Length: 137
Image 1 (cartoon, helix red, strand yellow):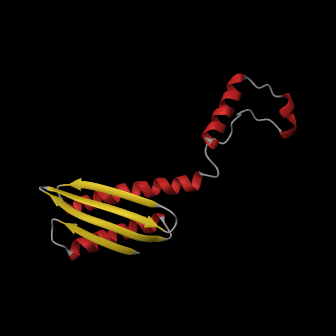
Image 2: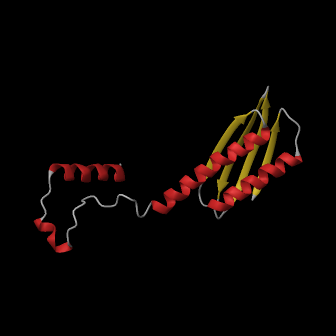
Image 3: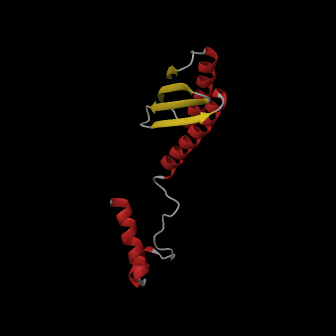
């Protein structure tokens, strides 16, 4: 994984770089198979320590996460929590995109040959039309 570190209004720190590198590496390795690049910016503005992280992966994902705190290491920890939640959300979306939880439009258990005998009311038609609008825009 390629890392780029930028320090604004502060001196560069190898310990801070290594801390951010290990934290980001462990989180991205849990959720992604092909991480490519991480761009991390450390900045100090008066008493606020700001960390911004942009990650671009080979699986076609791109995240930009930022956190401001009173401590630089605390900012990195909170940034990792935000990054973890975004990666988990992305992984859940990829996992559920073929088989969503609400797959059944009509909840009545009907065999394949019995469709002609099922009564359809207006609410079922509205549900069907709304699902088509969501699916095809």
